[in-house]
Amino acid sequence: AGPDHAIVARGDAETPATEGLVHRVGSCRLAGILRDHGDYPGFFPDGRRIIYSSNQGDPSGRTFALYLINEDGTGEERVTTSEAPTFNSFPMLSPDGRYLAFSSDRGAVGPGEINVFLAEWVDPLPAGAP
Image (cartoon, rainbow, N blue to C red):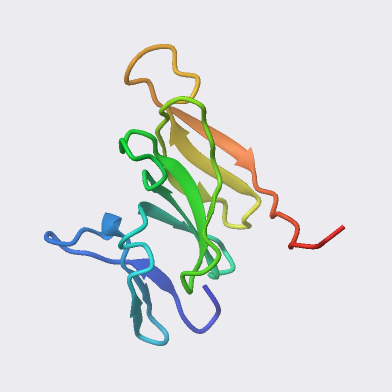
């Protein structure tokens, strides 16, 4: 988040933080950006983007992918893909935003096996860039 405010996920026993209510403390703006989108938000150091886990792209609800969205709710895009049902969740960025850690069952040898992955984060080029 910027120097004059912070972004936090908040919730209570009836509405857990995993439902993704995002609250911009500095401006006291409560936005349900992730309420209908996903869970387990991870925030970029710039405070302008959020990465989260969701099964929204799978009608069966079995495949969880990571998605990126701007803090104002625009620009949503899928970050992870998989041929088979896969669980990708709990994204966290390094403080400098260079690395993304997340848990996944991709490449699992047996049922229930979850691994932690560390990936270098490279921002995509803007549309129309050479």
